[in-house]
Every structure is written in structure tokens, then in C-alpha cells.
Amino acid sequence: MGGRVPSVNLGAMAGRRCLACDTVEPVAGLEPVWPLDWRCPTCGHATAERDGIAMFAPELADTVSGVDPKGFAALSRVEDGHFWFVARSELIVGLTRKYFPKARKLVEIGCGTGTVLRELAASRHWERLVGSELHPSGLNFARRRLPSGVEFVQMDARQIPAANLFDLTGAFDVIEHIADDEAVLRGMRAATEPGGGIIIAVPQHPWLWSPADDFAHHQRRYRRGELEDKIRRSGYEILFSSSFTAWLLPLMAISRLIQKGKAADVDAYEFAPSPIVNRVLTAILRAEVWMTLAGWRWPAGGSRIVVGRAV
Image 1 (cartoon, one colour):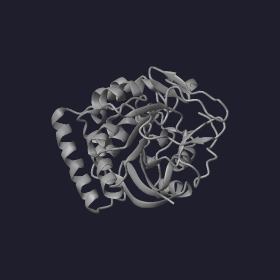
Image 2 (cartoon, helix red, strand yellow):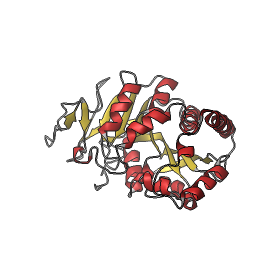
Image 3 (cartoon, helix red, strand yellow):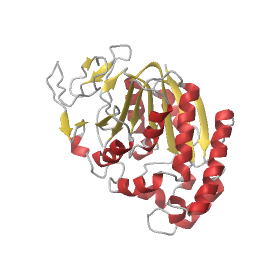
Image 4 (cartoon, one colour):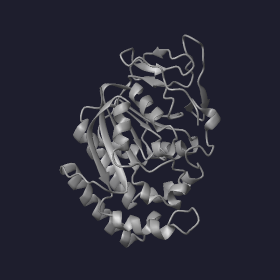
């Protein structure tokens, strides 16, 4: 995926941003951020539309860019109740409540099938709740999961058509799929009002790389401290940083070793465990989430979650 970094004056007007000329237009009242019939008042550039969704990168829609969109159907079948997805959503919601209790305008970058967005939607009243995704096939699942009033938009994560508009942005296991991850972080900063927040989750530890990462089209697993440095360079101060799935790291390491000699595919035990194993692992991760929100920080784990504030 290619594209330019937004040239947005962070102290300027808040609103939707034209990707063609960088004009920023205020968003009035409760109107959608990106109306389907929107046309830039300066250059006349019109937004594409498909099935009721504004399309800002239609040429990349449902191509194998970052992820294989064919995987959304399988993902949607296992996310509900799966130990990792359940615990991750609970941690993200908990961090949102702890660090940004007054946030009311949120956009999730790369919302996929809407699992995390659904939990965030249920956690408080939002003035604006937006799910963005490169692939409309993922948004089709997300629209079924989310209540009316949630806005969905197709976009390239490196070119976010907004400026100073949201008080919270999130990307949960997304930017590791993108070669220029810092372009995404800078775009999220440009879309965030000063003092607003960011929450990012990524896979951690390059030594855990396995065929599962190839299967997922990952560009990288992050070294400790790497994500924090990139977030700081993008215009944030770090409020929170910790590993996630720390208690399951030995199991993950064993799973990765088993996968080393296999073709690039997702290990069945890790992706879809038996109901009994799933309940046990859910309980373990929920305990870890509770301790994390209570103040514990884990130096190692399969994932890293970082919270920052726009400065």
C-alpha cells in the first residue's frame, strides 16, 4: 500500500479532510463524519460509495493488502467466546475507562469484523463511534454486530480523512500488517484532537515469529520499546505500556516451536481450542487483565498494548 502522510496543521480546524487537497471541513451536529454524497467544497473531489459505505481507497478494497479478506468469515466464527479475543477486548475497554473516561468520539482503525468495537460501543454513550477498515468484506460482518448509529468507512489506514476530530483513536493488532506503521500513527495523531488519546495493540517479540505470522500477513513482531518510540515520534506521550498474554507466553513459545516445521497456517490448538481448554485459558487471561488494570506491568508476553496522549 502506498500513500502520502497527511499535511495537516494540528492546531487548525477540526473536521473531515479531503485527501485530494487537504481542505478541512467542519462536521456539523450529528451528521455523519463522511456523508455518502460528500464533495470537497474546495477542489470538488467526490467520495466513492459502495453498499452504503464511504470508500476512500476503493482500489485496495478486498485485495490481499495487509490481510487476506477471505479470512474474515473464519475469524467471525471464532472470535465470540475465544479466550484471546474476549480478554483483549476486556483489557481495551478497561484501559479506555481508566485513561479516557470522558472520551466521546472514537474511531477504530482496522476494525475488522467489529469485535472490539462492539464491546466499546456497549461500554458508554458515544457522540461519535466510527469503525474503519480497508476491506468492505470485514465491514459487512461489523455492521451486523454493531447497533445503529455507528458509522463505518472504508479507508487506507495511512491516509485518514480527518483532522483534530476524535478524542480517542485505536488500532488493535492492525499496524503490524502495514509496512509503514509510522505513517498510520502520524495519521491517527492528525485525526486526534490535542489532549486526546490513542490505544495500540500489536504482537510482540520477533523470536516468536512463526508460520502463523506469515499466514496473518504480518510485517513484524515488535521488540520491547519499539512501539513506544514510534508512538512518541508521532506526537504522543506514553501513559501506559505493558505486555499482554504474559501468563500464556510459555504455551505460545511451545506452539510456535511446533509450527516451525509446518506450512504457513494457523495452529488449530491456538486458534480454536476445545471448550474446556478455552474456559481455562479465558480464566487465566481475565486474571491477568484484572491485575494489569490494578497496576501490574508485564515485561514479556505475546502482545504489547500502549496508551498515549496527544501532545
